[in-house]
Image (cartoon, rainbow, N blue to C red):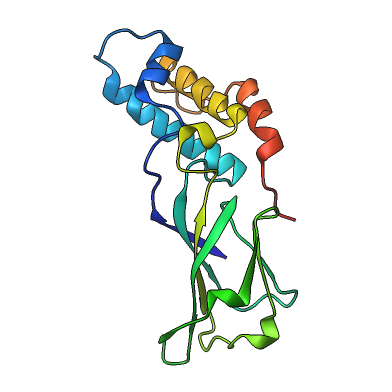
Length: 188
């Protein structure tokens, strides 16, 4: 399964003003650095949890229909299926009715009857789903422990902006790992 970002989030889980207040920065000299740290921290938390914090659009690509009729969607949490396509032998995409799928938001998966859907003609990447994922459109929709993990990463990276020595292991604060642990979507 491959996942491709189609539409990035419109906002970050933390505003520049909130980040500066947390860092106790009162000047504007580092605004660009702090804004970049906000994005980098969000992306890091999303990668560690396999969850989109703010609403985003993604394309999920699989080779064939899973035999059990369930397709996990990562990143999660799944909000909506907007399109589904199957490619034939000639690499032509054919739309599949989204009503053929049930969005299981609780487990961030799509449920369907694989025997009732057209088989892909391509050997690889024969099926595509366009989905909307994330906790919501606003920073307030993101669970507070994940927002705080973003804050702590921003602070850590702001204070440790120097280059690490060659071969040195850089360790993130253990509090970040503890905050995101309950939200991690693991693969079995």
